[in-house]
Image (cartoon, protein in one colour):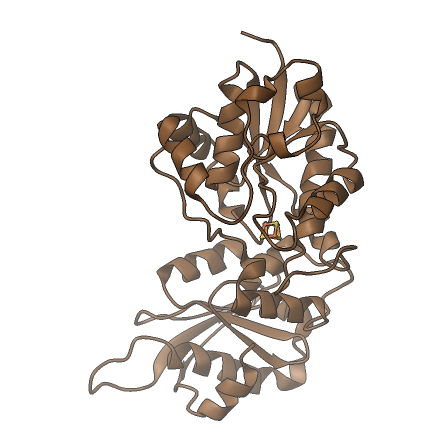
Amino acid sequence: MSKRLALGLFSGGLDSILACRVVADQGIRVVALKFVTPFFDHDLLGQQEAYARAMREQYGLDVQVVDISEGYLRLLENPAHGFGKHFNPCIDCKILMLRRARELMGVYGASFLITGEVLGQRPMSQRRDTLRVIERDSGCGGLLLRPLSAKLMEPTQAELEGWVDRERLFDFSGRGRRQQKQLAAQLGITDYPTPAGGCMLTDPNLAARIKHFYHGLFSFGEQRAVDDVRLLVVGRQFKLDENLWFIVGRDERDNNRLEALRSPDDWLVRMTTRPGPVGILRHGRHQVTAGGQEELIRRLAGIVVRYGKKIPDGPAEADVMIDMGEEIVRGRFGPWANDADLQSWRI
Ligand code: SF4
């Protein structure tokens, strides 16, 4: 077997699986890099070994999870190539990933890079001129092999040096998926995700919320924190006042996430005698002034009770605990009844 090693950008979608496999099947050792940010696949950071095992079993690929959150949060402030339809900076996103992959080449001893990009598949980020821009701005000229469309492009170093056989690469183009599906069948790959993908920045609702956040929805300091962004996509979100950000779980999964993401200065609100949501007041310890505390507690508890489990023919009120870190307040509160208020606070 060749000692050559290539790093692949691995989204987990079919194109990236195929691109990595096509090169691996030529005897190159491929390490598939799965980049994660708070906007896509961040949960994999807690299950890297299981994920790597699953990818090895399913696709025969060596996948490594790499967190690029910090750089990504900065990128979203002002991406040089702008945004797609929603808050998705696809061109700069790819440039960032390729730059990171290029940096990692030395670490892995890699000779070249692979992506699953297909010429003309996406209107903005996979046009021929855009692919060149991505290559140029990431500093990957000549290093970057796109095996699925390679025959429609200038040969790269890997082909010129004979590390890979260009004849065994492909000339796929356009939006259709027929050729990819055929190739998958030939390679024995039957189980793969649909192309929809899991990037929150292309989801109209989440993208709007994230954009709002970036445009000063709250100002908790100059740097946007990874955990703030992760909280932004959980549960029901309320802006109760300037910098009073309250998040309420919709189900057990949300509640668990909220508790896991809670920082020491967040307030936690929950009913104590019947099931219901967890509420987190972000940075409550610093954001709440003593003067308005009593009314705020009534409001927070009321929202949690409002979305909590109701008892048929039982009392609407519930026992609620507000854990403020240094102090815990307990009391009996009724549900916040004014829907217009709730609506106006929703983000
Ligand atoms: S859809 Fe999301 S992950 Fe994919 S290139 Fe665009 S911004 Fe990056």
